[in-house]
Image 1: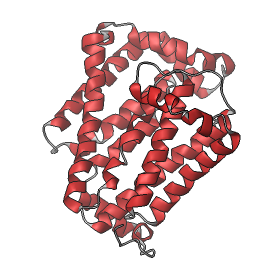
Image 2: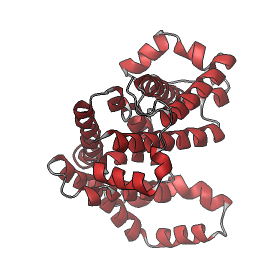
Image 3: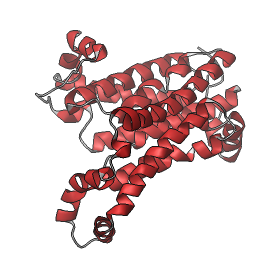
Image 4: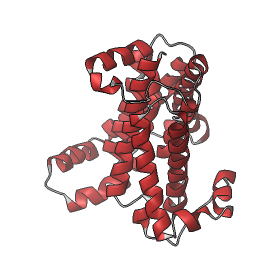
Length: 286
């Protein structure tokens, strides 16, 4: 991957992350909007315990000024990454701040959500300035993406056994969508949902189909030949999860950027010249 391709990738990736950070801010789930929540959950994860024992919540969550500065620094570092995509220091700063945002969210959401997993790791390769080493690290993100869905399939088929429980689809659908149906009984979407409730076989079949799509991602662990197809599988999985389970995990699609080949980034840059606009120092490594 040459510098032009990396610049296009860096800017679009940072922009995608900032888009969801903005959505989080609007939905009152960034530190400055949480207003010092009293409840938290660390689980058995040593990372979260380290976060707590270092008293970072006192600085980043419970301190009003600190929380505002935390959000502001995250947003500004992302903008600086877009402006100077080859400056390593901004990539490092943005990565650390995003990781702290993810840990903070999961801690006070009382559950370690999978939706932030991609955000935690996706920018780590951008700490590397060497072209060949960066390309290898970026391929690691691709394999992590495949592993992520394969691990989910293994869990559901071999450990949780939900793949073999025929009623799992409708069992997931009902508790997650009942609130929407109650408050919006006359919408088109409610009509569609009621059709699925009358035809439980469609929900159960669809649930199994989505799990099989997760297992299909194993192909990407052995060959890149089908990357153009594999690119769409997480999109289908995430979109169907949102539609049928009301679970918003679109941030996971940040890992899908790794399925796009360097020559495709080249074409995107040629089609949208602004993405490769020569801002001062953009062509210089730190």
